[in-house]
Image (cartoon, rainbow, N blue to C red; front, side, top):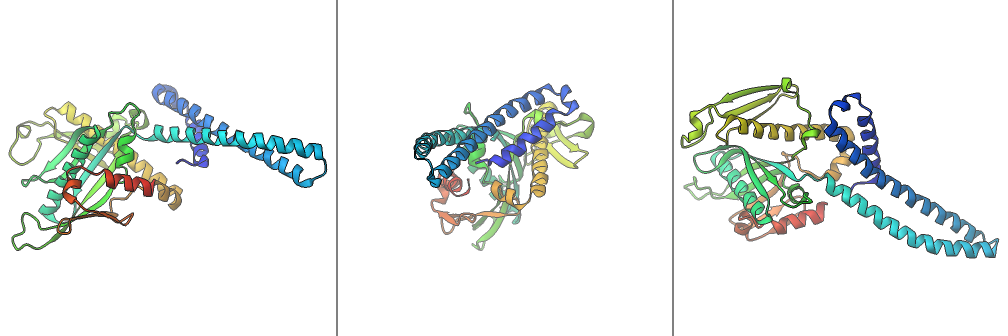
Length: 352
């Protein structure tokens, strides 16, 4: 849950942003900031009211402990009983306000990026297995899925695949809360399809979970982009290879390069590429802010970096182990078939 001090810092930052003269030309962002300012004000005001109650209780305790005036002591004791009840109510209200703010902050959509790591063809196959695992999990949750970019291999694996998951619930948020701990390096131990001698191989794939930002939060100027069109590539010589439908976008200030080639028209691929770019720019911004704030804030966020090995899928032993919470599950085939709920619940319980 968000801490009050963090909320106060956010509030000060919003006041600064609202005083920016350039905000006049971006009414959508201004409207969102004003709504968030009002929401945070309610929390800060409730916290101040709670502090006043606590101070009054302490004052009454001083009167009671002094033991000088019996009538005054009786009044202080009665008032403290009433204030104690009021304090309980105010605490519940404050927790409720903060929880609502927590839920507001969680995005309704995320971008999932899976890349083959160490292990060659087997790593690409494992990346494909992870994609199918998350796709099946998303279907069980009732989420919407859209592939934004992919680089498949001949053996039904992926060098890289990027897709969007969107919560179908009106409140949103559940897609991020359930997927946020999937980011990091996933390791597989099994006998690959390509292995003739029956040896167990270890391969890896990295997963990145990027919250999809609202357009108002990521201001990309057209003159900061270099857009190239080219023929899509992939096994099998599909229809998309015949025309220059694939899109490559370079964000010149940051040097970030994104591509999309899954759709059959340039416009849709460009839209998909911009979605990936926005998510990566937000990730970059959050990463830079995290470095400034330091280790304490990073520990609170608990989102794994790509270099962190978070989980091992051991097929010969029918076991999945999450190294962060030192817990294992069996029935690996069921987990790979999208039945991730036991893993997700354990992570939420230990890391939230």
